[in-house]
Length: 182
Image (cartoon, rainbow, N blue to C red; front, side):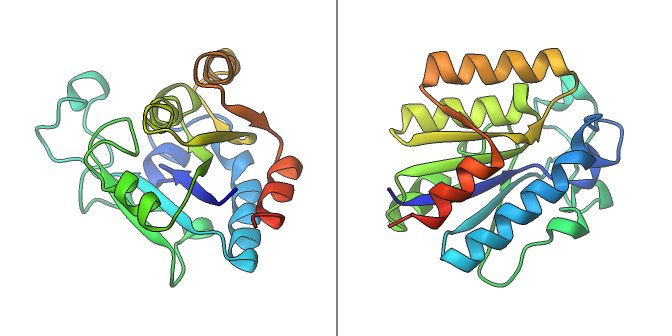
C-alpha cells in the first residue's frame, strides 16, 4: 500500500465563510495531526482547493465562492501547505476533474487515497467517486471530514462505503495506515 493524504477545500470560505460547515473548525486539529504524521512518514500531502472563475457552472448553484485570488479561496493558516506539499486547484466538486491529480498520483506510485476535508457530501464524495473510477483504494477519515449537517455527513459516508468500497476510518486507524505505508 502506498497512500497519499488528500486535503479537500480547507479554505477560508468553507471553514469561516458563507459556505462553512458547522463542524469545519472541529476537524482542523485532526487534519493537522494527519498532515504532521504524513510528513514524518514520507506520505505525500496534496491539497485540492476550489479556485473558481467568475463564470464557472457551479456558481449558478452556490453563488460566488472561493473565487481565484480572493481571501476566501486561501487554505486556512492552520493547514497552510509546507515545502514539498502540493496544491492543485479545482473548479468543480471533484479533486480529480481537470486538476492533474490522477497523473500526479500515478507518477508518485500511489494506490490509496486518504480523503479529508470539506464537504463530506459534495467535494469529498465526488473526489471519492473519481478515485473509485480511476482504480484507487479509498480511505475516508470520518473524524477529519465535515458537511453542512450531520445527516449529510452520515449519508455521504455510508454512500462512499457501499458504492465505492471506501474504508470509513477514524483518525487513529488512518494513522496506522500512514505509519505502515511500506
